[in-house]
Image (cartoon, rainbow, N blue to C red; front, side, top):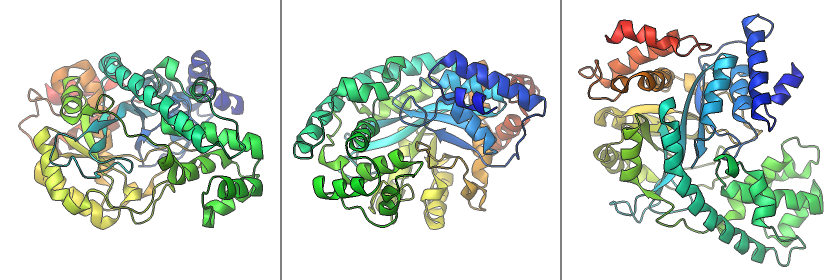
Length: 442
């Protein structure tokens, strides 16, 4: 079993899926068991943007954590989707797929504000959730030019980074030699700032080693303060998550020195992204961040974002045609979430949850989701799964289609019914939801 689990995270796709098949058979035979929780997570990053997990491995780790649903979300890429769906089916866990993209708010009333993006004003992170399987190829073609333009900026950022390293004793990084091989770009994946920082972290460890020498190097050569918990973690050469901890520190304290703002060509206008998402039967969702007092992930500083003008922003999102808002319960206070939930109800927006996984240190579990103020998000996730499978079968069965047989019902009623269908679906045979839906929708 240990060998099979390792194969799930290998570089060969056929080996990964074969391992998923064999693990799924062990599950069916009762040889591999787990404690099933109410928890779900539909915002797991994979190796196709930045993550220690191949899609098959992410599906299994979610299964092993007791989750009912796993969903892949990658930056500027949906290349993990087919494998995520197939591996999840073989292992026996419900799945959903989508992508995350930065879009332009430059031609909106919020052009000069830092909205939900710590690096940029007038540029917003958003997710396109619940992409039907038949639309994955179309989504990939939509994202391809964004990845290509982003790589032009990535090359320029590496050049700026090398200037900063001139007096550091580190050998310069080469984008093609040191950064690209860390990505899955040739298979439709994206190259992000995390890949550049990963290459830098590897260069530091190869040159300096681990432990106290790295801490000294960061402080003396790069001028990065290393204090508190992160100082303890990086002082420990036996730290199993050393590379990811180092990357997180570099992201929060060194990336701003060479980060270049994305161009208009790289950040598609928000209206175009929303229109595209709806056109393929997916669910575009604004990703609420909220003011940060203390970063849960350790790579964001305390800062103010959209809370000061949230009422105005949510009203504008509804006007643009957004059907949903997504947020992460571990990152927000109860007061923040209650305010956001009230605004979602006022404007008829679906609430979607998910906690981004992109480090080996992170847990796939999210017990915060089971709190009284969040438990409804579990049904939303199951409704999202049902929406995706049913839209793949029939466009009119999209949760937000004006031709949906339930179109005259409230959003809450539609979500409740779709959640019921999602939970009743056999995860080993996700197409089984169609027969269930026919009895409810026809």
